[in-house]
Amino acid sequence: MTQDRWSEVKQLIRDSFTVLEEYEEQLDPGHAEVVEFETPQGILKASFNRQPKVEGKKTLYSHRSGGSVRVDYTYSETDEVSYFTIDRWDDASEQWIPVDANGLF
Image 1: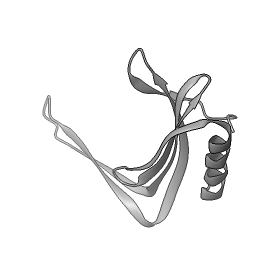
Image 2 (image 1 turned 135 degrees about the horizontal axis):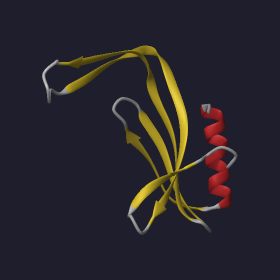
Image 3 (image 1 turned 90 degrees about the vertical axis):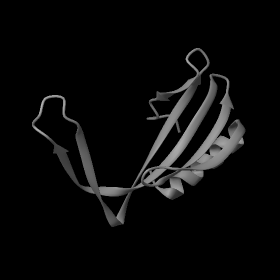
Image 4 (image 1 turned 180 degrees about the vertical axis):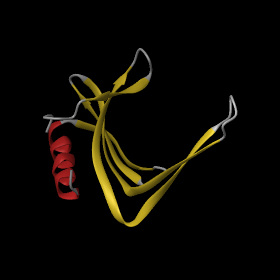
């Protein structure tokens, strides 16, 4: 998803539903623009995430039994990756549940 398409989706949400909250979240690394809104199906959270592109991954571990594993990532200074997610609030478990966003907008 592009920034222009995300702007269109946000406007569509504002026009069609009751917006509860809009905010930005800091990710490690990157950031996300989040819109929480109320629908007849319940409370949904749409987020547009932007992160630097992963250029490499290095796994560090010891050969000892029960040893820990650590993964080091290297990120691009110039390239950025963006993606769209949508979650539904579940009152029973009191947590956000991912929803398949294909074809929603």
